[in-house]
Length: 385
Image 1 (cartoon, rainbow, N blue to C red):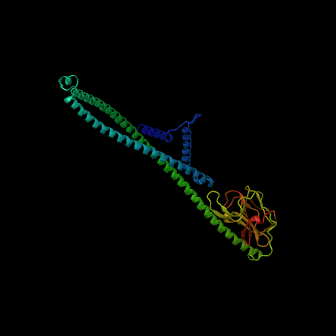
Image 2: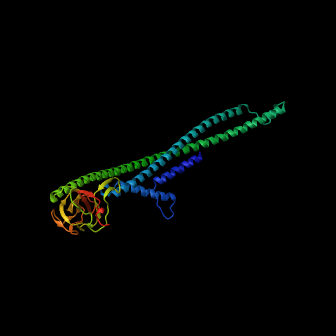
Image 3: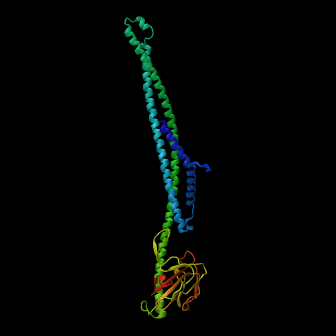
């Protein structure tokens, strides 16, 4: 029983130290101190995450916070499990000590009764010393009788020793039971505290997940809007081609896919085709390529042609569309300002606008498209390699 009690006390002490008491970590940190420092840092971080204004963060930051809070929730679940395990051990120890004390009490009663019977017998019927020898006519029988009396006296001493041991055990069990009960009560407080922290962290996790779902929903809604606007742009180009050039889509003459130049300096980023959200997953169509740059960078005509459209167009922002030979047209979007007007003839390399971030844009860049009969095609098929 002592070993079990010591193990329980050690477990409870370690749990309380790890979960409740602060520690100063110095050059001679123990493993426990280092673990406590990390847990303190993690707890502080989790508390800070709960106060973060999610709306002010970028998608990547929100996703990173979700990973952190999920790890924090997992850690807290482990803490709760450890606290409950220690509490269960304390409750078991209380029950064990109670049962042991009750058994010692019952043994004490039985032993006390037996001692009382022995005492009465000794007082009423005991004959020891020289009297049995003087009164006996059979010395052998008298010797046997005295030997039995000596044995009985030794048995009585054993009973008294047993009584003392039982009293000591009962006292120890009662004392240890009280201590175990105090530890159980303290551990109940620990469990409640850890459960409260777990609930707080799960609420934070739910809030972050809800924010991510809202952003995914907004991103998907934006994708649908972009697709609608791309379709509207297709219809606009086809209508303007028919009006300005006098031919219907698909009925144009010979056209060349060669002779185009890059419409601005800078490297191409997001390519043509399905574009996957870099943080949340999911795809949406990307009808052109994005070329990085700074606000105000010049944008020039990729090939000579006449301006079909110049103005603001929904998610495209400030946009210029240039008609080239046949049914090929190029589109320049998100510009900060326009330097061309509808009907203008522009030569290759002539500035048609300045780089910006109008419309659906997260930063200054040029969204560049090449269309055939108004339908977007991969610009890489037309631009020099």
